[in-house]
Length: 505
View (cartoon, rainbow, N blue to C red):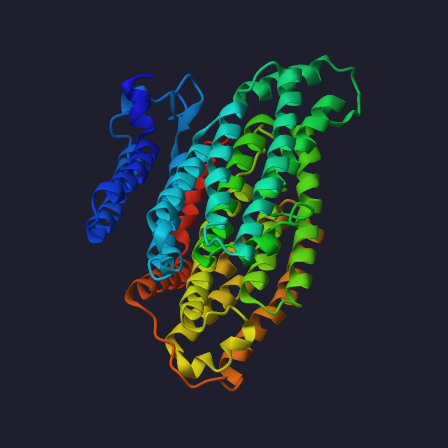
């Protein structure tokens, strides 16, 4: 490993170093304020390194012809796509940590371990967006999954422990499927490099008999791709790999549920975009796997929205909501043609923009739930009755988040859906757009039911709900992002389009 490799990994190394430092400080220094100050200031270091890399400072002379920096034996790639997701993960981490301060008193003895594990999970996600090689992808996934399993079970109660075990077991099964699929792809192509896999598959197709209709040109390759889809399907919580979501979301601490719902999904889609648009994006292959994602999208939107109607708890409602939103995002994955001249970046760019908008929206919703549960000790929808009178600002923030999740202007949720729906329509997938539109109408029922309870139902008690300053800060930032990106989404859309142009190089 060279100094240049270390510099390319500097955001991840500095973040992992921060996790270790706060654990050591907690052991030897009993001053909690010093430890927490180190934690806050330390988050700025990976952000600074990411900004330097984005501007090409220190790597401008080492960029390849595609303006990418390659390191760690050609397994790591640093480009605009990678760095945009690093900014997203660091932003999500910051919001979740700020909103956790008022929550972690519930497990005071493991408070520092909680923040350390959260940071390590983020490091895994950042690596996941950076890698271009299958073995490194698998290692990064495990680095993400293991801290998440511990965080889900960190409360120590029966519900939390059960959720942690369930996540760990199902995550292991999905990882096994993913690894088995990767083995098939490696066995048939002779490489684990994303770009080289594409070239090998092209050679396989050329060697096939003329006029062959065999899926993917090879049944073994078809099996490998299906297993990879199944493995990633668990990570993005799409149907039919969604069975873990409601129970895990309900049992996990609410800040961890928020982190899992947005960061894990973003990491999953980042690696899906890198692998499928890097390895399987030739004209004859993309049609095959894009239809798999189209079917999964319809099922996720339908099942997620219909089952959410019956939910009585906010965390379970948002769990099924995130399943439905995985379906909306997969609509962007279906818009493919080939790596040739007629390739369009409209679909992938729509997915990236949706991930950013969804992160702001869902974090706003969960931070509001955290603020409410801190005072009421419950996340039941019934306990929100009269919140519009007990905490007008808090109710307004939650209402804005729910309106954005529905996809109503002028929120970022509307712009996100508009982007993926337009890309699917331009790709000729009108039936998928119709399914998404109907699903959005259905979702309005349960989102607006919550708003109705907050503003039209009589409060169960007249005690005001006060929000602590840090939670207020997290809520303000996320709600402002929802509104500002909804009114002026151009910079984010441009950044997303610039980022996805590196997928095929």
